[in-house]
Length: 199
Image 1 (tube, helix red, strand yellow):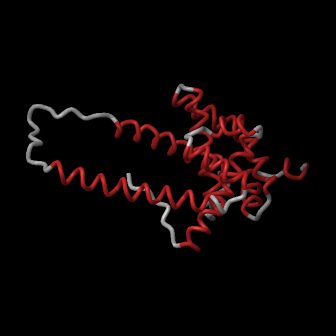
Image 2: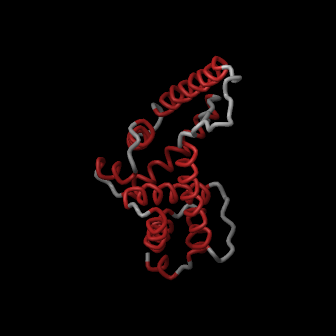
Image 3: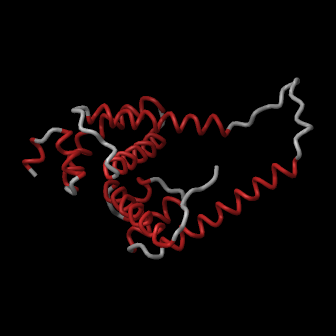
């Protein structure tokens, strides 16, 4: 572990890509305070900051594993940009979920209601099928991975809540999710299943 302490962030990132999970633990311990503080400063809510922090690190893990990190000597800048994008996505989602008032000059009477409902019903049925397929794929996961996927996606718990309920660290619950997603992607190819949900 002492050699990891002397490595740069970039060396740790590349070591993790090569399969050294301890390198990621060191990288996380170095960067988590700075990234969390930035997210908290932007959103001004500790619970939300925790959720966005966990989402950020899940994206960092995925991008590293998918080979989407290029060693530019600026790992922290790269990680902070991911955090920034997660925050922006969160604010966009809130903005798009707000109800829009019709306004005086907008005449919406020419829209055919049945068409709108039909397309929504199609999306609803497609999404229900995706969730059904996800449940089927989950059955093939190891117990610990299946548990974290269920708690995250079907109970909508944060990684902090999952860690507390399963008596493990947040890092462990993140790791279990990472491996679960990797395994589910592999399984989805084997079974020819789409995991994309319509919005």
